[in-house]
Image (cartoon, rainbow, N blue to C red):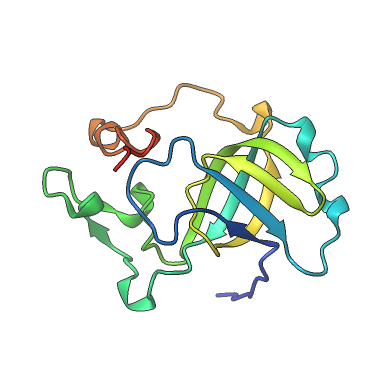
Length: 159
């Protein structure tokens, strides 16, 4: 099997230092392009409403990687499903993907809303979201996944 290495195209600057399961609503983050990438790499991106950000779950220890099935969030009330049937961070290549709203572009920085990546997260790629790449039919997902995501995009409660 072919193996390859990737260099991050940027780094996330966010308020959260560690991963959390819920309450990502209202979060804003700044993605700073990696050294050597010119600001013009972001040219035209502000004309889109959303971007898909591909990133690395860099805090996941290799020993915590899951390759088989497990209960999402270790909740026994939800079925045991394969790692590719869930979006958990402990996946084989530790790659995350989120579609988030573009707030603005400032020089070599992209400001986004509701990116569920923590501070210092390496960004692998930034793609504009185009309607033609979204699903062309109805989305279907099991009931447990709706329950899992119930609080995910809510604002974090005040302490």
